[in-house]
Length: 475
Image (cartoon, rainbow, N blue to C red):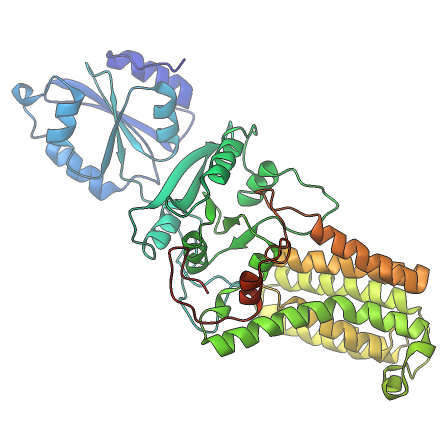
């Protein structure tokens, strides 16, 4: 049973001071003063409080005379709290959660309700375009770590009264804010109810890694299947478009990424540039992306298979045969380069920008030219792996790119060990990992291919201009 606050101010102060460790926390402040002949106590977190708004409140408070003091908190709120968002609470736990969220709390002697004044001022960075989800044409804003700002970016794009921003709390210690954003008339309410219940039933101390921690708590999928269950985006225009299509967007406080559910593999591959250009250009970019992703998956395993079975190479393809001496087995060369590419990627991420140019020069000279001339690698292997590395960056989703990478490495190893049968087995494992995967809604990961929907399947590859309908605006 929820514990209620008392009408005696001193009892409330003693309880709050003990719970909030007032005196030990330098940033948790409380101040007691008299307003209209009654004692009043203010609790707030230094760094969250909007000083200008609180100054306005104080200007109003000092003018209150004892004879003007109302008998009920509702009347006090109507007459003397004209600024900001004011909520009256009598539940002790909700008051604690509000104070720790940065909301200013005012307790008045004789009132059995506390005034929660939302005049927070969050420290935040600018809404510049995200590094990973850049577009050639379109809006240049992006999500930030402040949840209120992220919801405002979506509200700016969807001005419908049916747009719902539902607040939930996750984490026993962290009490992290989680928002479910959806259009009430277009969302699948059965899926929404299941998703809400899953979030409410999460028993965890805190969401340490924000949205990734929530994703792992929501769906306990098999660790050996690397294909992602969610589409993550830092672009508010992408999130708004998905909401208009009937999806649910999950936003976690302190995370600049929105989780879009449910998402099939075709949804994850999509990106904003597919829709910021005319249909012909958008269709070309989309088809190019699909072809590049498929070629990056198949190129090195197919070439390794042909090198192990040179009789299968037709006369007109003899130029792909290795011309130099092979000092290191081809499979080792591929695996070493797969790891080296990730090593260079990690080095680039952790290298200060002023040193990025020397790093690029060293990578080009040492890893590129000298590794071939020294005999460690063959030039053909370096060429194909360079294409694969570039193709990985054409995939907008980081998790999906690594899923393809893992499947490619498994196929390479099986091909090197079992030859043709290993190549076939590798592709069977890859296809099975995709086919038997399920979205968080429990539906097919390959929709609209399985189950087959000809119209929707065509729209995944070729973007055509269709009339807008009540199912969304994306085509």
